Length: 245
Image (cartoon, rainbow, N blue to C red; front, side, top):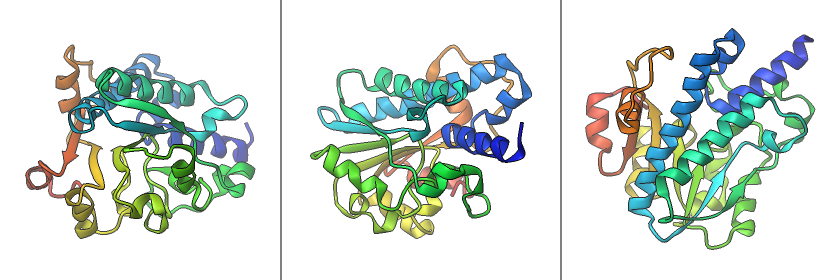
């Protein structure tokens, strides 16, 4: 495989998985990779359950990976995105109304060669830097009246400039976001406290290895690998995991 093409595929996979299990697919460990997909579904099921409590009867939009809409996406990309949407629906059932799934427009550079797009060191959500400028604001036109945005791909790099972020509504619920895109710790806490950021699922420090067997109870499995951060538990979680963000 050409180096340029291989780099592009790696970026696409990272964008889809937010670092969950991407190395496992390349390592060829099918069983462990399947567990990674299952854990993604579990993470979003618990997030969906929380959304059902906090946003019952409201309209939600899922923000998903735009690479899945292009011809011939890797099967791993599709599997991770489908697991996420499935988990959310299972978690919130009929309590939250799904208005639609939104795929932000990719930037010209990302369309030409995603592997060549510049990203800051330590970036954990590549799609934050692969979507077009102000692409996320299109959501407001496509889905007016949206109460909740659930992102499977993190936050956009131009978040502070977006009308979507400046308005009181919609609120955000996030899977494994790079919260640094909001700002420093003070800004992140403020986003939780003012209700703009309803919840975020983050990786739990010290979690078992990817090879660990799945727990039978989905909430027990979630607790092993993830942390659900909300305005209500923010300070308690940071007291336990001071370096979480």
